[in-house]
Length: 370
Image (tube, rainbow, N blue to C red):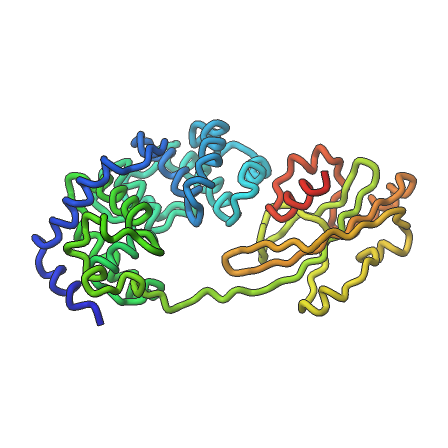
């Protein structure tokens, strides 16, 4: 549909130069002053890239600063307990990133003597490092001329060159990566990669970009053809699943019952409360306040409170949660402890609970309880 412009561009390397030069001219005048841009240390660059995956800069920056303060070197991160790392990560989401972060640091220390590999191909072999992150580290830290292709780059290239290939398809990813690598100037790959991503983030925004003030507008296919809102094309929409959780906050003195999230579901390695998942909204709304998992057979709560419905949005899931709090008398603590062990739960004091890594949903509930 729009690919004639792309075909013409790819056959004439010279016609790419205005695009590249414009971005390189624009970048130093408009770039944000971010700490990971003032270094060529691959550890700092890697740390920032992992934290910023699926995360806005404003949200990720405090986490980056906290991790760098606690783990200034890759060795510090590698030797830290995973529970500590998960606690520092809590609230950031996509928790597999934190586990991969820890494993990658251990590999760098054990296999590479604490030094990150200096090539794109070797970096891709590390845990949790895909094509984008490997390209970012290779170009920013080691000046390797390899392109980074993130959502900002997809959008800018699609609009400027008039590419209508689905960016979610394998063919689309290959097409955009090929073009992006054609564009990377060998003498300043890191600066160009930063520039193209920053331009997409600040100027060529997903909605309502200011095309009148855009320095690329004269050569932009989407601007000339009034197709800015139509590009990029993404056909494969993410299907969002609704889930319904009823949490049981069981408290006895200064202790609460918690469970560790295990493999095969969201929030692996974090801690929440015993929970029953309803199959439907109707079942969820009809759920009663009975004590769970046979606990009612030998423990009598003296108070219970039902809080409001919490809504938590993930990329592929929309979670609705209700918290029911049961306060158990201290003289029944031994029976409660035996019950937790039988059901693979944990009875921990509230100071320990504070130090455990927890999903944002649990954090919000606990903050509301204070």
